[in-house]
Image (cartoon, rainbow, N blue to C red; front, side):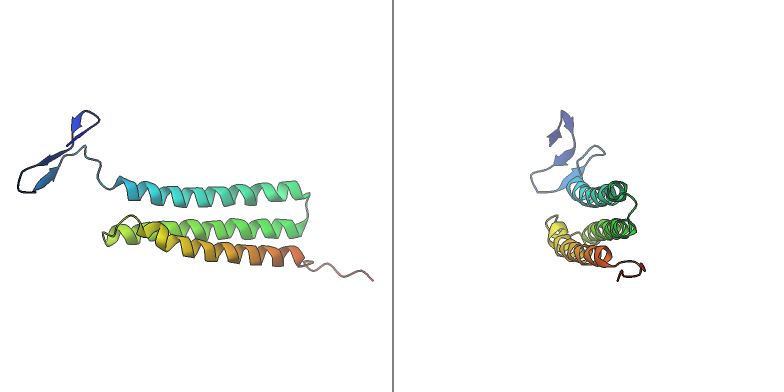
Amino acid sequence: MIWHGRVVEVRDSGGRRQQTSGGPVGWPADRLGGALACTSIGLTALLGGVWPLLAGGDRRHARAAAVVRWHGVGIGAAALLTLWWQAGGDRPVWVIPAVWGPIALALLASTAAFTTAALRDPGGVPARR
């Protein structure tokens, strides 16, 4: 097999194959898992970092932004753990989004619930009469 002008795999008529050092081995799963982890952490870090800056010093918004950031870490960690689980068991690439997707949705629902609670909580400020 030739990949970008280089021989990357040798096969014989009996079905035996031998990879070369330049072969594209295992990269789809690595890139998919890395993209899921980095994108989820990056987007939530961006949102959680910009939010308190735009809120004008409101402590409730700062707490809500921290909730978003920490849930983003959880979503990214779930992506990495799913990638390691997939690679360790030699499972097909499609199991990464199939396993990570429901976990990410559950964490996003948790993010929404905790963020809403943080925004509604007066944070120890006494109520006005």
